[in-house]
Amino acid sequence: MNTLFDKIWDAHVVQNIPDGPTQLYIDRLYCHEVTSPQAFDGMRARGLQCFRPERIVCMPDHNTPTHDQDKPIEDPVSRHQVETLAKNATEFGLKHFGMFSKDNGIIHVVGPEKGLSLPGMTIVCGDSHTSTHGAMGAVAFGIGTSEVEMVMASQCILQQKPKSMRISINGQLGKGVTAKDVALYLMAKLTTSGATGYFVEYAGEAVRAMSMESRLTLCNLSIEMGARGGFIAPDETTFAYIKGREYAPKGEAWEKAVNYWRTLRSGDDAVFDRELSFDAADIEPRITYGTNPGMGIGITECIPEGGSRALQYMGFESGQKLLGTKVDYVFLGACTNGRIEDFRAFASIVKGRKKSEGVVAWLVPGSWAVDKQIREEGLDSVLEAAGFEIRQPGCSACLAMNDDKVPAGKLCLSTSNRNFEGRQGPGSRTILCSPLTAAAAAVTGVITDPRLLQTNELV
Image (cartoon, rainbow, N blue to C red; front, side, top):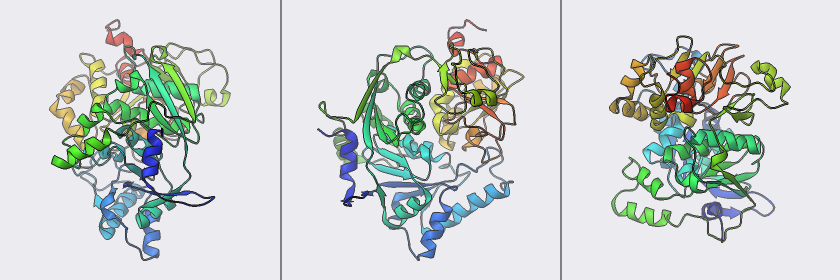
């Protein structure tokens, strides 16, 4: 029996090239402002139009500021990137969710919430964290700019078929343990290259119990293990999430789609190239200590030996516990943790408390739809009462491509996906964590085990 990955991949094969790659049909191409300009230029130079424009969606997110979006963008490079995408989308007749429109946000947040990413699809974008959409039960992966042009021109791509891996998380996650902690745990176990060459299917009781938003977080971070992508077989949780969304099938088409989606699972006798299993009970809230996402520990653990360059950059030492370490910045957001569930989690910790005076906090929704839901649920009142401000949607402090940069030397607890040197700004220091852990630091001013605040052991 084929794996689910085989089923989806094989259903999209146009042709297998002898001793070469597979020509794979692509159902959805997402374009943002950073990796698309050269692709559009290439199409223009060859006098080509997009082969299936209805399958392409454009959206600025990396360069968008998270304040004053109704005004011209101050940074000339960012302004040029955003304006160029808008012009290219108009010229090529593509759907464009422009900045400050109700449809805008981070492309990997908006795609699923709009019902544009669906089970059984092949989905690509010129962005490594396209693996996020795998949570829908899709084969989704990042591609290079020349490949973006290839998909624009033909709605196909040339790819070598990856190997298959299944990672099962068995049992139930403990209190205060989120999908982000699961991902950080897996990265530490496998390292940042442990899944290189594989497409990962996540399975097991703990994964099945996750909400769709948690699954999106888990799949988002697949790339940080070196995987080509990660996905989860669709189930009733998936269908309930998709139903009624703007671009989801309706009426008879919905019933037909769900009947097909129910077949999208690996058989009981499916053979994977590699299988791994972990016990959910072994996972506690996690933080990173170094300069790649795989350099992580449980929040109560000590930094292990090794990684001297990374530790020197971070200002830490082997054997050190990070609990109680002073925090300068806290960032809630990114395509990893910018969804409504993440804001609910953050608010659950800060409710009735106050932001630490020594902490600068950036709370950035992943889309205008998330922003709207925050206000409908009254989370804005909870956050504002605790001294927090909600910024406007965008990639924000995940990466130093917009105004939200962490100053050199400052330590940021971040819910984003990467902690490379200078990722959040030249000389900045990043610790990756969950929204619960970020919230705990935001109100205490130091790295704090969020479980203590959940049980009111700290006031």
